[in-house]
Image (tube, rainbow over all chains, first blue to last red; front, side, top):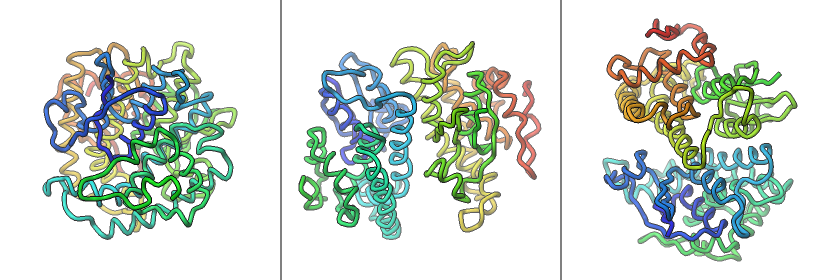
Length: 230
Length: 230
């Protein structure tokens, strides 16, 4: 069986869970704590980061970007499964550009300030940055999320999905980041109806179910988190 | 003519210059200052980041990762030019993994502490983080560079190039980052002979010439920077 070593609320790990499920590729998950730098984990990925995917034949693929490309190259036309980067080079570049927008800009401006402050730091030892959330960082993260919901609204006013007519890795990346922030209840959906409509579409896909069942011990999800009619 | 909007000493822009030259694709460059957030530049790339490539037919491709994939898809087999991601999915994943190592880990642990502190911050207005280098950051960057030279040595003791038998985007990414740090004279080559031998090989390639001719006004390159026998 394929194995994914992940952290449940880490958006780039969630993106891979969505990608595997959309491709209808079976997998089981193991939660890892990369900051412990255990030898067995470093042997799989010297960068000591999740996600790491272990294929049924033993092939190890680490790094979220690398896994996306690997999956689309090896399982390009699975039975009814999603092509993550469809179309020609220009369409593929647009899907990649928007996925990077979320995996870099949204990550720095929102995820780092909300998910890392409120969740990741609870699990870290103090010498690695553990502790209570920095309220100024949380304030900045809450402020920034609106800019990104505006950008999603701008895109879906012009397109069916974020990168064009088809669902792509851009939608999975954006939804993965938003889903982690939404777990905390920090997405002001009511103010961004177009973005909310897009998220409702992707949230109702079968690939999303496992994400909606996640829970962090001692930190329950926001009440609407798993609700498809939010 | 193809145009590349870049920042001369930014490693991810340098990676694209190397990739274009290795593919024997002609291009001209314009230096941009993304932090000014000019409307014309935002219209090309809403993320307001270099590099942005404008193809002769007007196609705009922004983001260094996106440009690499676009180039390899559109110009897969140019006349004698380099394939950036050669081989099958496993070989390609390894080249991507190592390129990410440099574009993420080296960038955070070394480039940010040395190149951004000593060069980028000279050009930024004070309210965007401009000012003299933070000496503690510089100390950390100088310390970290050794770990990465060790990793390069580990790889080239086992392989011809960083990702395997062939030159790939992994070598271009690593060399691009090291070249910017080497401009400052902060690479302790003498302590890492295997890494130095690898860098000498890539530095002597014709694709490297334009990088070795760069100079930042008011900050001359280290004396050995352009020397092939360093």
